[in-house]
Image 1 (cartoon, helix red, strand yellow):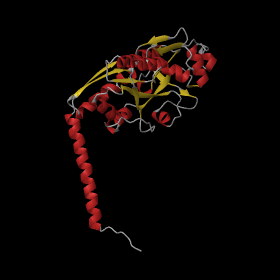
Image 2 (cartoon, one colour):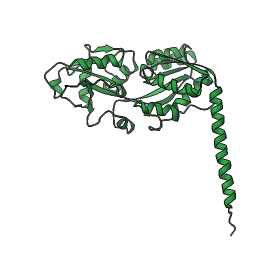
Image 3 (cartoon, rainbow, N blue to C red):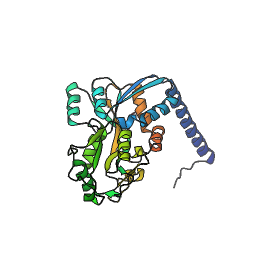
Length: 298
């Protein structure tokens, strides 16, 4: 029987050639990144824009000095509207497209493509002194829809519940309704806030208040995050799929009009350097959840 063998020096030569090819490819990628130029306009989710977006842009421009990136953060809906109007290259959102947005895109002949970049979790927060340390899914829904209006109804003290929620146009406002409330409306007496910082400060001042914020935004020592059932809001619980109030962050692009610089920025965020920024800021990276839809090279 004939056997095919490989001499040691031949195997070593093959390894060296393979290593050289990898080094040359990396150098080529670095040269391409350094010479890439353009202007990327990003408009959309405040969840993306408050801290994550600026950090990603700063890290991106370290190796792409000739690309300028403009970021405007309002809400997910405004970003999609700007993308449909041709006013931006990328629209980061904390929710999927609504049926109305899909209809608008079709009417304009625009193909919107979604590219996942990671996950964030929404923590339900209360005043630090509140003795309630956990709520069930049903209790959370009852509180935010107004069916339950006193803490004694969920095992707490006899005091009225004050609701603090995000403004209706924010992606988190709609997202929390979908995740926690079966899309039912918030109770009429709920107070709305345009930023997490304002919402959190209010909960920290009011012993009977309850609200929500992105998990990485829960920083005020006057508040604490509740368990939902037996699950704590954490990167681990989101990553493992245990925590119920988690949402995907994604970019939307105009598939046939995306510029090389915008395409490159999406790939940067989806790959290791950008994902490391997400993880450092307390988000769950896209590869941890084995998400699909990687931005193509071409």
